[in-house]
Image (cartoon, rainbow, N blue to C red):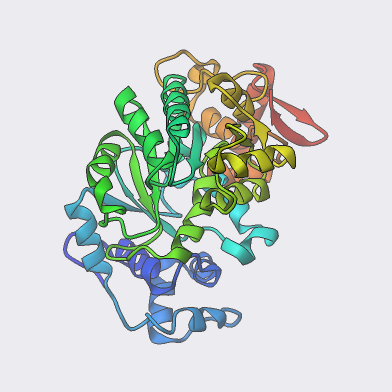
Length: 377
């Protein structure tokens, strides 16, 4: 499986990333049990450990096709990389909720992600807001999107969206113009620009941010892949804001994922006569989303009680933390509490190291323990 310049483990990951239509919990379970190299070999040989038989059905259609070396070569040519669950930049905490019982059946965690651009996935997930909405955006919607996107960028947030026409494109363009970081999560292969007319925009996004896809090179966009992609937009952002949405909208699907994952959800009100704001008005009226109207209200949605200075260029209270303390701090969600074992898993640190870091963070007021659960201070 090893191609020129790529080691056996990476080519195994690349094979596994293509061998089943993502997301595929059965492949992830096998990898977690025996590692990527042995998992790839077992799938090819059609002999898997007891209890992992479902992976054979999930991979039956593609197991004999091995494009791993070619996929990695294509990624190299376009300046992309394959980020896996074993990589330091993997946003484990943000994606963890996708694997819980009530979400896994509809769309679990990704096995790996193809990334074009310098932005790290863990950094994006740590301080980002998703701005989403109608492809048939109104001039009002595009104006509001540009205002929010550039303002959030100035506050140090990365802006996530889907690279599409309308609200998505307006959000990406505004951040690029502001010199900030934006990421587009795609429903096609990392080597394809979709829509094609956004080729220059996607190239600009990749200069400082990231173009992200769960799908290997060459994969074409399809309706079901857009719906699958939406869960990643919601999971990888600290909050989601719907700027415009019609009565039936793909943005509503992303919003539903945000609610299911427990992420903050905001919606921008529009003219009562506007068909492109019907979805937003319904979310607000049904108390599914919080009404937001400016940058300050979006920041408060994502970081209640303050926390706007989360990004680049401004002094932050966490700047003096050691690398281990910062990883522990970042592993604690903005809302709610978690146990030490969960923090250790998300941070990728030994429990003893986590305990020591929490003690220091507690003394300095960065975190607090409430009923055995650790929360941000």
